[in-house]
Image 1: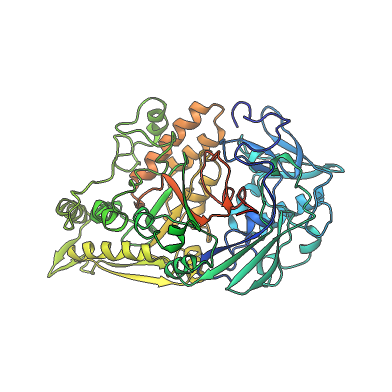
Image 2 (image 1 turned 135 degrees about the vertical axis):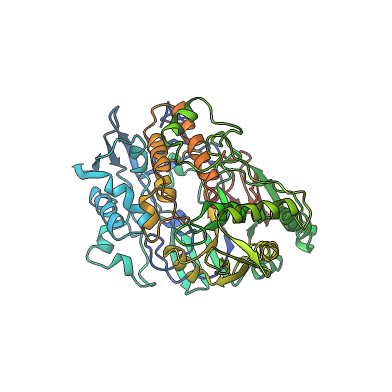
Length: 572
């Protein structure tokens, strides 16, 4: 995006892999909930989240050790002019789908058209910004853009490529469970039991095993995904030796619950990995499409009533710092205090419509850590009073006398989120607010999120060090009313739309960072989410035979780290 990629054209492998890692063996990973689809590229159904990383590939791939840089994967070369008004990809002659048929320009054109119309809505935005996709040679395809957006040349290389022969004339959006999309990736689905398990087997004829971008990756022959009813059952299965590796997100649990016999014997190893990726946003999101959360004063009260310090101490031992903005733990996070310099300039045209604190500075409330949180409750009462609410006979009522009540949508699989909600509800009762928990299975949770059918819901939005056009899908005005979009809070803001435009059109890193700082200010001060804690290090407990490279990528753990670059020691 800016400057020169870190790796030279003749690089041998990515910097965080062991190029000569041994191949072989099998592992079992665990998921909570279930699945009713094996097509992760459409809106319908719930598919195992890992599938796209194992089975499909794009024209280019990301190095998780540097932001804003892509390298050739299916494409052997990329050409784009200085103004990036178009990009041309030349496919590798050896690129093949799992059935051995070559990946062609026709497959690329078909994939972008199919995903842009029948695929999940997250794919529609890019296709709308491509004015034409044309075959320019036996292995070449050119995409011409209708939007001034320097990032499009990179985004155009990041869509999964599907087989035209498999899907032409078929109902892709409503394909049955048994009709599994075929990709060019290292693994194929070789077995499954609906809702229970999926088996992925490494393709011994995988076309890309010698491509530098793939050297030292995908080392395990078979990966089985087992599904469990909730996190507690999954943890017990791990302790019993039925699962090979488990990610742990709670510092208190990591410190106190991972002392079972297999750990004491050394059969299970606890590994931690520091990273520099943004915190993203995890918390309870408020749906501004409906009352009472269409009023920022009510949202402000909900944040004030959330006793983070007490909840954090109770559930994590206070070991994990709070998310303070959408890009915490990174250089992209907004700076404290009033906006200055270029950030202030970018916010200035919208100063009359921005939420309080966006320009002057906004920080989350901090409690004294006691269970009662008197200061937070008083602050919440003030904000509710400003919004026209008052407590009568122990019930908080609106201007028309209607009791203030709402529900929190959760997935049944997360016991931690349930515990957070229960502690939060106790505080809201003191305000006279009646809150219920609506715990549903994974399929219902996804469906209701897609339709924005909730008052408040658990929310997780991972963000990268190279945010760009996807931000429109997360919080752009157009996405607010688009079913299936990730703008769950329903925010519509001319300032946010303009700042995203500035981010993606920035021609220098300084301009990009200023726009991101400004966007972070507007999102955080908008009080759309009640933030939880962030994860500044990744924790994985795993069987001792599972090994990983010494160099940890900038982004730390993720599906492109474990299991992609891990291997099984044949002698352990």
